Amino acid sequence: MPTFNIFEILKIAEKFLTSHNITEAKLDAEVMLCDVLNIERKVLPTIREKNLTAKQYSLYQKYLERRANREPVSYIIGNTEFMGLKFKVSSDVLIPRQETEILVETVNNFIKKNNCKNILDLCTGSGCIAVSVAKYNKDISVTASDISEKALNIAKENAELNKVSDRINFVQSNIFESINEKFDIIVSNPPYVTEKEYKTLEKELYFEPKLALTAEDNGLYFYKQIAENAKKYLNNNGAIFLELNANLSKEIESLFKNFSSTKIIKDYSGLPRILQISTQKEK
Ligand SMILES: C[S@@+](CC[C@H](N)C(=O)[O-])C[C@H]1O[C@@H](n2cnc3c(N)ncnc32)[C@H](O)[C@@H]1O
Image 1 (cartoon, rainbow, N blue to C red):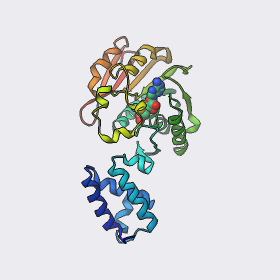
Image 2: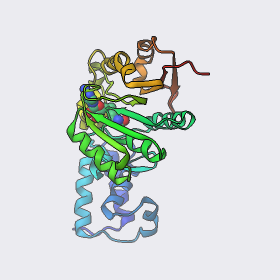
Image 3: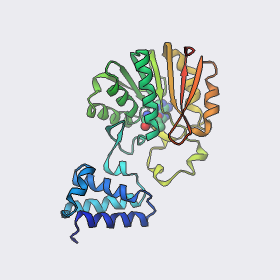
Image 4: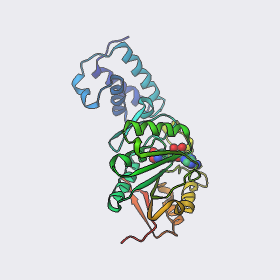
């Protein structure tokens, strides 16, 4: 094995990833090396002269090859950060996205203002929404549901990792099929990619479960199901918060015209990203 110190290996790794068209080559190289070394990123500059062991070198090489093959870093290292919390991820769940943090923040504000007691997270996946809502709202009780048993197992692990499993009830359900309660809030980041959009995604996205991405009916299937059925599962004055396919925002909003009010919230790129739906007119 050639002997490289951390400074040298990072330079080589960045060059290797760049040559494979990885845009965030430096960041990815650092994040994966930190995982190999089991250290936080802020420690990296302080140990630049240290050499890698043979075992660390060989593991890092495998990581780099996987990344060059366009596998997302979060799957390679097996975790990611969301709302300042650590989440385990595997190829059974969608990797939590930054845009979804806006959904959680919007829900958190609503819970605080309206003193909500319970919430349903439909299509929970890794459990990132359910777990972070539970973590930041100490009195809320959460139901997290998904059709995928494998996803629910990851979500349960994430609830334990973040010490909120006592306030989250996990239910395997095809949308509302096995839900038998009413809630103050329904939140969902449902699958919303159309079959046409799916064909043009970046290579990284094909490592994610198709079940988590695509929706029939031109991307509208889950929004239509929620629009048709949600009232049965909402308490008086309840609200729905949905992440939007930005290309379909107007069509999605119009599905909820029978509700008292709707409001679209934009993401960091100025795209329509969250739809807030109320059963009561806002004062
Ligand atoms: C876009 S992912 C969202 C995951 C997570 N909530 C997040 O924001 O990162 C959608 C999730 O919907 C689940 N799903 C797909 N079809 C479903 C169905 N018919 N009923 C319930 N969940 C479903 C998938 O398993 C996946 O976990």
